[in-house]
Image 1 (tube, rainbow, N blue to C red):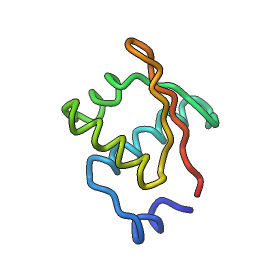
Image 2 (image 1 turned 135 degrees about the vertical axis):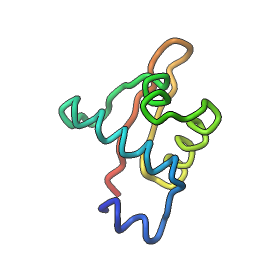
Image 3 (image 1 turned 90 degrees about the vertical axis):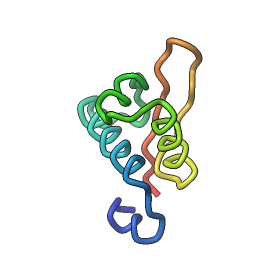
Length: 85
């Protein structure tokens, strides 16, 4: 489902929406992979979000079905997958 249409029925906070666009940009640069990795520190820097807000936005994206992510432990970038629902 397209992002704008999904926003009508399942809206996101500004922080979560911006994080989604950043994740899309990273995946675009990676060649539209099904799964991709990116460091949380890089996403936080680009989004200018404090750690707590970043984590809340990422959880919101997952709970609302926009993304899936898997944490891989300390000092390892999370694996992300953009949902195409």
